[in-house]
Length: 93
Image (cartoon, rainbow, N blue to C red; front, side):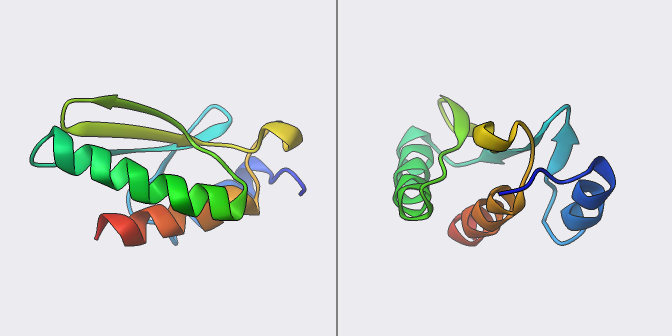
């Protein structure tokens, strides 16, 4: 998969809900009522990521999950990152 230009990424970000570009990743922070809800969200995201064979970089502290996406093989952001971001947002709803 081909790495997107910064302009392409900026344009695609308009189709997502509150994802931000930071260096060569797109990022978003998710907040939940408690740790159990945050962990359940991560579990559901893990199944989607595995199905897409595209895995997030993430961090969980109590009720907050921070996710960063990029495509390591392409050394930047690709369509795969946007596909997974959309699935993550759908799970969060």
